[in-house]
Image (tube, rainbow over all chains, first blue to last red; front, side, top):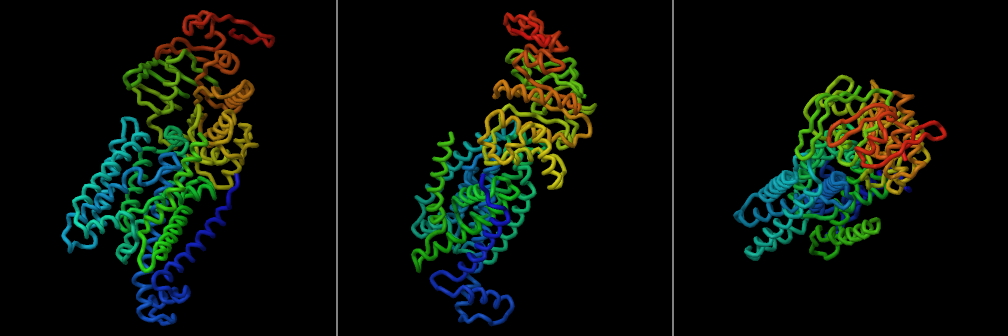
Length: 340
Length: 251
């Protein structure tokens, strides 16, 4: 088994992430020098004037690109960590946070908010509604899947599929009756975009990212034991029901909030944990933090690509990740089939 | 050390009722009986997987009263097969046995090595677990159980559910000899569901015979497994032969 040493992987990811952040602040319809965009941020914090940028250029960096970069980092990290945790919980490397129905539930919440709220609704209506709906949806699925002797993974998956189908049809129904301007809103939002980044979302995302990363790390050893099977984990002294409940709540929180901040962004939670596992092994104590770094990097790069491909317009970043992720998912499926 | 009194199953559909049954430290105890007799159910009950009524105690304390982590340090279960599909190395699978323990990293490395040598699988340490053969996986899991029980303050209890089902003759012999050594040298208590009656005769110190959820006999395998009983409970016309080493064998 060939694996990269943990420190090498972590250092490489951190370095790439730093460069990714710089690139993200410098690139877009208005292209700026890397170094100057970093200086612009420092200027704004210290009140100095080291960068050679014009005022409007500094404003672009500080007010648009910095929040967007930070949001990409945190949403990517949350999605990838939630993906890794779900795959551990389901003991299946193909599981994705979307599977337990949080994504589709959150999407229904957002669509309902967009359709029913007055045109002058507050900025938090859509995020809050999508987050609440996603949370409620995953709780419902968990309830459905709860048998008398613990949670059945198979039932959980099937319930997730059923709820996703229901959510899909509800969204379709609302899109069908929505007027043109709202329809555009709905479609764009469903495809995911980081363009709405502002300081409120960044602070909210930061708080949740730190909280769930801390809880996941605390539970990493127990997640390793859970990979042996639920009965075996119990024999190893783990309160399996408590563990599963906590994991599902954390994933609902992470995915619900990232959907609320940036719309539906698929496949980050599938691709990143899988690549990290191939590079440095399946131990959750290292997998979870490395997946966080990797997810941040992947979403950051996808967001840069989404801004550069069709300048001066933007692609929704969810489209970019889906374009990258869907073929990857098919390859994974074929590999699983070969292994039997 | 493991004692069951007036134990009944709470679940409907299958009945298991044991008036009195015990397994002691230093003893390899075989659970025998035809399919559906309740052997695995009894094992799973002791492992804490199914709810029951009555008294089941380990070292004088009811099984349900143990703190889960503390119980895990005294009671381990060797699974028949494992669903682990992620690419752990054999060594990492063994290290999972440290979950209920408090070990420093260095100490854990040393302990992992010790139990892997004890279970004769140290040569597999760097290999990917999913690619191991059934017998090799079984040895890795035995090492994991040994690690899990390595900090027990009192004699540990090891439960085995048809431990040799995926193994060839040589592997079966190695595993069961190793398990018997654990009883004799490290005062483990071992309770194993066995299908092969000759394994019980050769390796077990004591045996219990179950039929339709009830205990119908207990004693040394030699006296318990008479050809008459085998005829009654398995419907098999067995004959008892003494081999060249002077041991009884059923044919």
